[in-house]
Length: 470
Image (cartoon, rainbow, N blue to C red; front, side, top):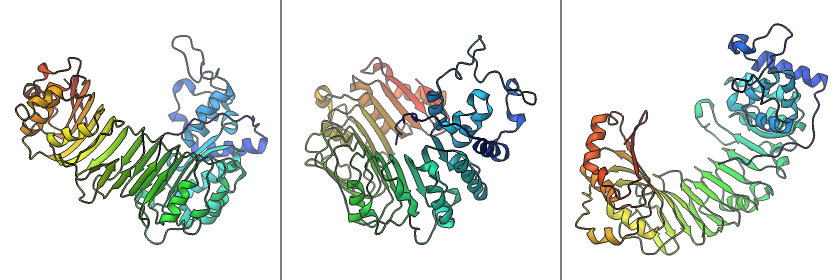
């Protein structure tokens, strides 16, 4: 989810002597880079300030430092925590900026050692007067050091906190076993100011129904055990919510969406009913192998849809009156004209099925296909001879993943090479080793790219390491 840019603070903070001492202590003992790591041009003798921070080409002018404090402060607030603190050592011009800019306290940019993280975060909160833009609590600390985290959240520097991430996770990405801990009590004092929130592996029982976030625009709920009432109550308590993430949550049977502001939904293993979402543009499935039951009743601006899959037999998408289940070629009966971007994950690459999708979504411009095999021969020159003349193919971008150059894949691709008159770009994602000149030359011949319907179309073959354009 994209984070909205924040306005610079209206109040200019001045660094008092105790704050300066605490800040310099953080730099000296925890975050200050070694002198050997600094560029030669910025190493100075004792007591001497570096002359330039950033040089314009050829004129030696420090153009960055000439920017207004508000602009520099906004830049600093978007840097990783350790880099933001280090800006104080650049020059006297920069010394006060970190303490007057909204700070971003993100544990991912700090040393991995838990003891060191606790020490650094405590010192930063003591040194910086605020305001805070973002605070990301280190994983597992809410379980092991609940009192410490609660004390941090009560710090005056966080009074106007706008982004909060609280995750209960062990080092290395391994989620902890056992009962999830309760959220720190101080979390709820930010309900009036928060714009971005992520909760992962916490117990919300008994409190979810009371949560209200009037300014929240982005909400992430991950690995929660939560009831229908609680989940739908949290969503209803975010009246201007724009982006919603629900990943690997259990305990509820369905989600009902009625939101005039919601623009994006990303989910996994969810029974979702979109009753009325006039601003919804993106509906994303995070788990192509998990069950997904979605009913879209009213979402007139929905443009991006995926990933649809035929891997799970209980997955189903009801789009208006169209039922899409296991992506069968005969399951598309009505038209959904708003969708322009579609991603699908299928076991068998089938041209008939994709043609059915294009009829269901006639305004498709970008199509992403991941397939694991190709049982169909995908012969089309006789079967779809008349169709190729009348079908309005508006595709501009096509991406084929797991392309191996087998004949069924070649036949599938040549249908679009020969008939997609608006095609601009087609990418073939191949295995490492198949991105060599010999393989590409052979595919160029088989795909008959010189006879492409769109003369401006570009083709490329990619692997994990390289891109080989045609």
